[in-house]
Amino acid sequence: MKKTAIILNIIFAALIITGDILFITLGGLLLKSLTSALFVLQGGMNLFFAIKMKTNLLKFCIFLVVGLVFAMLGDIFLNAEFAAGDIEFIIGAIFFAIGHVFFFTSYCFVLKFRWLDLVYGAAIILPSVLFITLAPIFDFGGIVMEILCIVYAIVISLMVGKALSNLVKNVSLLNIIIFVGSVLFFISDLMLLLNMFGGLPRFVDIICLATYYPAETLLAFSVLCATNIFNIGKTHEN
Image (cartoon, rainbow, N blue to C red; front, side):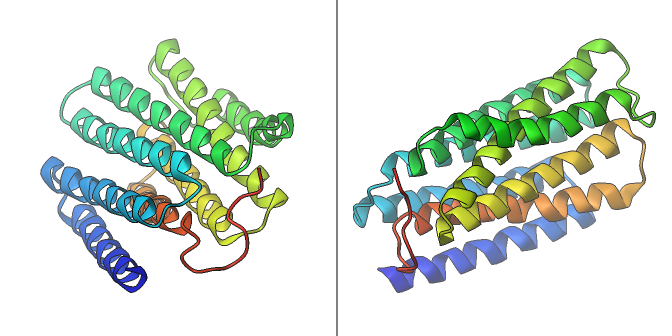
């Protein structure tokens, strides 16, 4: 089962990266949706393996996969925004924010919540909010959109902060994968912000997509790592 799980994850990763490249080249809502569905399927498959292997981090696995589902929904609405209007962007951002709440919660099942987690989050929130509010390059077209971006920045910063806090407290393969995936997610959203509201050229959009799908693939893969399938260190320390 272990060998099968690893091979299938490699196949999913290859398909997702291929879809990522094709979407960067060709675009299209259908292609974006199918590629996003792949990381949900990868996460669901790994959840199945986690159940079969009787992981003690099952709640982490379940909450993370739910987060992946909300990320997929966010993808669909954000991509629809380019052909429609602000409402689709707002809905997409809300779906993504909900997904980050599920990711944050899942990380708390790896290592219990500590107030120090918020300190790490605050260290990311402060420069993020200052950048959004003070950088002259941004044009949000209104206070509502700017507030939405600030709230979203706070939510994703708390998620990344928790991932960093877990890694600092316990350096394990699972926490490394979670942290790298979370940071790539943050970078992707930063690039999206610069592209959507900063008016920066296409290469920023390419970086956004080039970091986003690897982030989701790593997070989906972390569900398999929660089984300690690689037998490298402790997966958690509650």
